[in-house]
Image 1 (cartoon, rainbow, N blue to C red):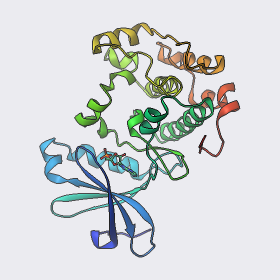
Image 2 (image 1 turned 30 degrees about the vertical axis):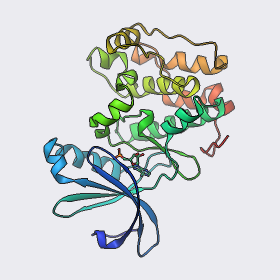
Image 3 (image 1 turned 90 degrees about the vertical axis):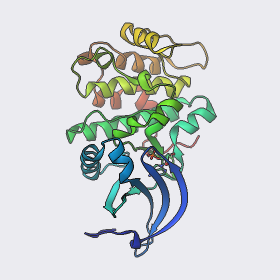
Length: 274
Ligand code: AMP
């Protein structure tokens, strides 16, 4: 699928997959190659309303330059008078979050496989000087084989609908962000700790009745491990080495990949179907 100029004519449009704040996503097939993709249709009018043009452009450029098995590919984009079209890799199994809700929590094998995939993808992004990826579970998709794909463009956080369904995204904020201090790529390592906990227990660690309480618990690193579901000491060891207030003391992405719990449990193929 390589071409300089794409247009809607190049695709057969299939079923409707879903809707975000800026537009709709459809299954599509590139006519020449038969390649199946997800086509995201963004309405320019909506972008204008939210003054989002420049932001989208930057995010598209970043995403287009990334090529990693755990980062959703953006193959191409084009536009007409009223719409922008993003030609995306199709993640057939959809949102990881949906599976977490259905299963309540993941097995250690599955959780470790996802954490390992995320750490690998983030290491790749950091190498390319792409930081502050937004790695909340709602932005993680699964392909047909169950491999994790980071799917956000950063701007997805702007979606109020998503915030609502997540009951507030502040659960993923690192202490330095809560305190509005300067922050760097170590915020991603914190978020990996939050996600690892959420995968294993079914909910994020600092959840509270209201935002203020969540902030307070994040700043205190008020970390508690419930007795059920039963989670191994090695998994807790990894979580506690990521949820560290001093960002310079958090486990590095490389050390995450070498952690005994990851080495023992993560499926090297990146797909876990148990
Ligand atoms: P979004 O506009 O990114 O919020 O996406 C709207 C819906 O389409 C969400 O339910 C996503 O899970 C789904 N979706 C977005 N991109 C893809 C993709 N590349 N493959 C499969 N589903 C997707």
